[in-house]
Length: 154
Image (cartoon, rainbow, N blue to C red; front, side):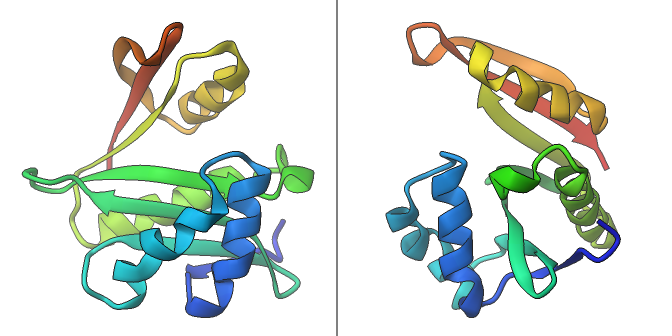
């Protein structure tokens, strides 16, 4: 894992990001072009970043500032190639993002996920990385699928 380099995403990373997004069921890959367009065109303040191992993109993250807040950011997606999950790559990605935000005096990072049993490991991942469960909105996504918001002061 020491060979992993984390850097801002670039246009040439789109295919790999889409593959990881699809393989991890984060979002449909066909949505990616619209999602990343503002970042690539530098028309918004979104942060897209990737992890590379041996010159191959193995992970990505996407974060945006929360509207009508001062220094609050929302991590909308973080994904690691399924074959490489559980090896610390996600934690390293989180540390990178937190450092980037801290370097620009941002205050808070939130993460939203689902409260289903299938995502229990995801919620535990955020807890292990220092995030506190701050809110839960029952049945937000659908019957039985709560929205769980995690919070961390940077």
